Image 1: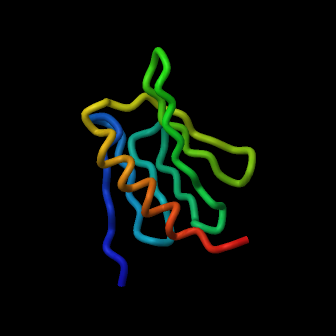
Image 2: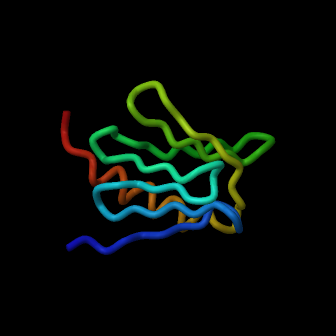
Length: 87
């Protein structure tokens, strides 16, 4: 059984990945993305620090993130990436 990985984006937005489903809590509404949709976490380091979760080749959720949380978010992003099955 795969351990659940949690990472806070901000004080109000939480990402949870259990090896199969990436969930977003506190972001307008709860969102569940199965690994089959190939979710990808992309960090944008411009004027605003943004985390974009892209999936299904065209859909996405974008949100600001707190810089102090970057390390944990990158660790979660790597777990999600590692769970992708080859195309």
